[in-house]
Length: 554
Ligand code: HEM
Image 1: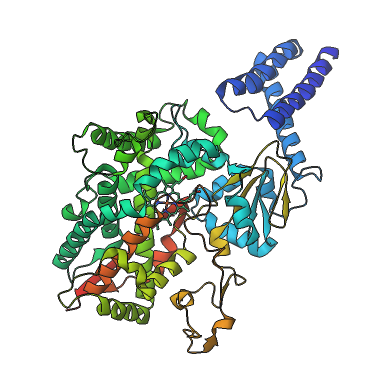
Image 2: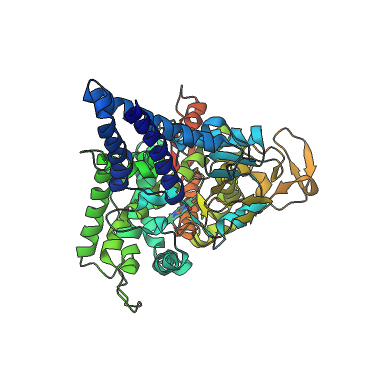
């Protein structure tokens, strides 16, 4: 009896100790888990063995009690008034465990879930045991441009085999050193060097679609083809040839979708990742993606075509501008970042825009007449760098990125441990808390975009004295709210989008060429709402098919 009560006491004390270690030091990794979660209860069970008729019963009883206590301490503390985030509202499931939000993420609708939580709880919501989401304009700069608020554990899964690609680097100094190379590749001057590649890709797309006039085509796929082709030129010096082939020759779309889905779910529970990778095949989907990207990069690195100033020209510092040659291993690992960040995002924004314009044929006509004024009589496009001067085109693109920013995820950051906590906008946030300023939600907030915050209405981006609403009602500019601090589809601060200039140039060029050349209508029998329903938050955006028919306008 004494022995049993000793074992019981030991179970209580050791589970509390292990809980304390996890809470204080957050040890990640398989070894610490083996020691703390297996060796400790295993030792206690071996001590209690003589009190049970069967060894299995001793082990089962001890392990179950040990884990039950660990779970009880964890949940008890997270729901208690002693937790540093106790005063912030949120659903119990979110407060208890990040497994809940990982589950929500696996369903693909996290963007809507968090938006609904803000509508229910207000401008700050506890979305995880140690996580807050904000819907307040003053949190944008506080979260994204704050040296004591770095990328959070959501980005830990980016780390692979000793290397962290650009988008996973947390330390600002290290990030700045790496980002410098990317900035050279995507400056306005560098973007201009890719105008010919873009022009070739656009002409090929128009030619291929012209051949398919009257047929049903999935414009979502075709836009992916051109986005991948252009990114192939920009990143690796050569297009993938998808537009000409009329198919995803490298299978990249599927690879990126799988990569984004798996890593988005895992990123909410990054500590599970090291365990999963120990199971044979546990990281198979990511390994496929990594290998495909590494092969593409390896081919480029070996290529003798070094005259091409593609991304790898800059990442490998072929101009010799850096005092120390950048790491080839690092560059190799950044292939996936370049392809997924550069193609899928831009493609999605273009397809969404076509979707909205098909939903609003009057807007489509209005954009076409703006384009007719600037295209030559022979159908030649204006200089791509001048597309920035087309107000309605840009208004349409801005409006798409307002309603559906390409990176739908929460863009998690974390208040530095040791900082003593920070005021982020009006909220005090204890150190070690993960935070996000939820752009999808803020972009639809009537305090920041008014009127019709949930409606596609590009006019709001035009500078006018008065505006006609879709209902026909007229409002004056003083009744309009467009909050440009809140509008951040490319994020904000040092870790904002590296490819913003190129992305804008590409979206303007492709959309204007398509809409100038074709009337685009939804395929007969296809309900446009199905497309909007297909949109999923996988950190970037997963989107379904958008079947259309095209007819040349002249
Ligand atoms: C409309 C198209 C695009 C949108 C809306 C977009 C949006 C974003 C956003 C919101 C981020 C921040 C992500 C985070 O904090 O987790 C980001 C990062 C990034 N984007 Fe884009 N992006 C677009 C196109 C591109 C293109 C064409 C490239 C070129 C390859 C690119 C390269 C990158 C890179 C490298 C990063 C990581 C930057 C860093 O961590 O320093 N993006 N993008």
